[in-house]
Figure 1 (spheres, rainbow, N blue to C red):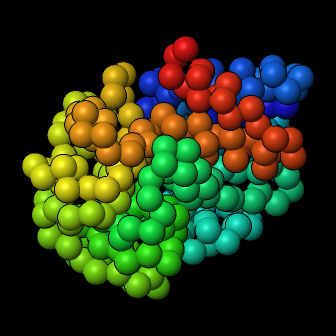
Figure 2 (cartoon, rainbow, N blue to C red; figure 1 turned 90 degrees about the vertical axis):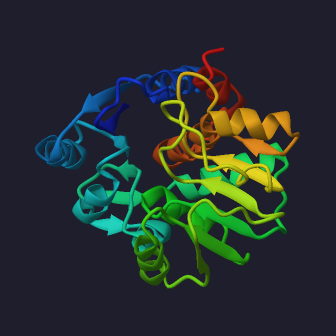
Length: 256
């Protein structure tokens, strides 16, 4: 089996080691390589997916929306968001969005309350996945450019409110769907402190300041590596039909 990660940059990603370990555990012969690609490289990867040179791929920034447009078929959540992070090869390439499962599963594993309202930070593809993951709950979207939050709600035809950037919502579950924290940046003061739960979709070489703060306050917290492992496990299940070894995948993602 030949799998790949498509994006730019990709050299920081934990996905190759994580998936390679899972494939070995499952007795699957194959490789998972990281490919730094521009738009032309992404189109070449689709040729490989259709020809059988690749069996599947994950897609990361900045190509998730472009990948969805290049697919021949889209699973429901990709069709709703216009975003694909998982590609299933064949004559017709199918795009899926396993980030939704990753958010739900990582939150559940961390004991994040499923009944509280949700404050989503961001308005891009990660925020779209978070919005679908939190369906059925009161939601506010806070983006640094408020019009983008409104466009997100409209595009997904999702109920919700636009909240000012940086304003806490007492008792809400906060989902950080921005890149803030990847390079050591902090979230606005008070946002994490007011939360009943915290899910961070980004990760860096060490825990983000927001994750460290939430944990110091004993707030149930799912970090970006947990989300990565759970969405990756779902991708592997789509490619192979086998149950993924999630504990092993998360351990490898953490460098353990």
